[in-house]
Amino acid sequence: AAPGRGGRGRRRPALGILFSLLVLAIAIAWALVPWLFAPGDPTAGIGMQALQPPSPEHWFGTDATGRDLYTRVVHGASQSLLGAVIAVGVGFVAGTAVGVVAGSRPGPVDDVLMRGVDVLLAIPGLLLSLSIIILLGFGTANAALAVGVTSIAAFARLARSQVVSVRVSDFVEAAYGSGGTFWTVLWRHILPNSLTAVLALAALQFGSAVLQIATLGFLGYGAPPPTPEWGLLVAEGRNYIATAWWLTTLPGIVIALVVLSANRLSGAIRRGGSS
Image (cartoon, rainbow, N blue to C red; front, side, top):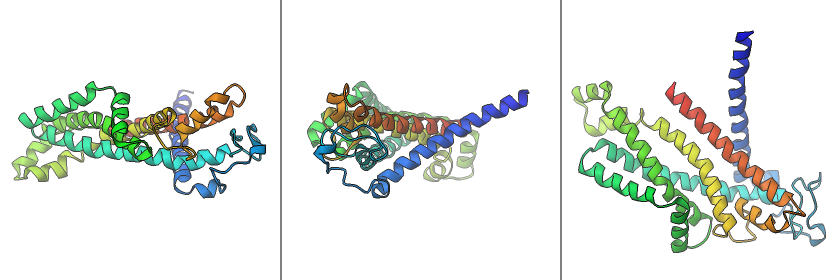
């Protein structure tokens, strides 16, 4: 009986990871080829079909102007997920570069870089994002860049801690002892053994970036109407929440599923790296 219970316990995490991958695969497919899943025009509506509840004809119902909400959610994936990819890319590249340099160059270089990271950490993420958007202007790309800047500090701190722990390992000392140069040892030994945790953080930050970009879109700092964007869809339906619950609930469920799936995948990467 005990082995059976253990087998079921192992299957449940595996099924959870498979479900998370399926959710992310569907969301990515929506972003890449939305017309295959929803061939209609996401910005065109029919007033006579306004505020219809979910039905076989309109899976997610319609909004106040008669636009099909499922079509808008599918086409909005490209805005939200592309923004999240840009945000994670900015944080990953810039933050990892800062962390690797700081961790591999102890002394004044490390001190200066990490004090800059401390300054970034001292500023609330939403406040920093709003400040950058006000400077650059509204739009999904600028919102993504702002979210990416707020994640640089997290990537930098994690990358530095990983590099510092690997740098003092015996195999790194042996590589230096056998005549390896700094850049050779960094590229062949330190980086490959330091990036697993950073990749796990990237998966986690992807979900966080989707949520932050949706938040900025909800506040009106993302894509302008009538462009479909997940946060904007939730914002457009908040005035009808008592009479048309689907306008906020169904896009909100999509956002939650994508964020939770990214977090689950991040945990799987982290556990795989530590085993």
